[in-house]
Image 1: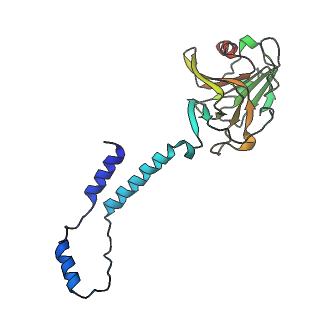
Image 2: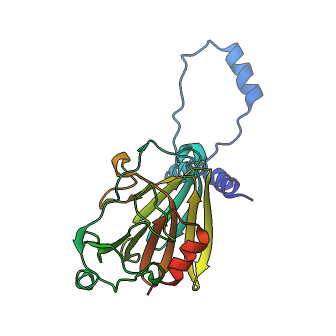
Length: 257
């Protein structure tokens, strides 16, 4: 028995039905007597019946929430501790041209740890970063490493860089990094050093960091992104973006020290 059938059966048990009247005798009496003024018998619902009806409404709401057209046509959802990727039937309105990524205040690798709630990781396969930034407004801080384009790091139109690395505490910022991808975007779940990762590649997709106190996204926050590898490293969520392929992304991730 389904949940809906169970609740309907229980609803029937809760109703106070009157005894079945003698319909034949009643009809004969009415035909023989003058027609009285119509009276409407009040319908009284027991409290338990009202509760049961409310339960059915809640159940119906859950059914409607499962219909794609009523939940923005989200086809697939992929989550990590600190990041979420949604595949949608249609992409929301957003920018048509790339725009620079949002970064914090410029600093150095030597000074960054003092402003972060974690020890920075550097992809040694790419060498030392050209620029380092820290955003202290994010709980635990957010570290951004920028690498110019060069051998093994082709220039990405989405960032004008060879590699963009973002790091933050995923345990303090659940689903802080969010991606919205269309049906043409390739999304793959994998593991690197035994920890979860998501590879997003192919067709460009939208990326945004959720603003504090804001549920969902704002159109002005969306940014076009290229190939991205999201991975967990202990309490950290690391994001690698560039025009490189899957194997190069995994190589960079494995070299994080």
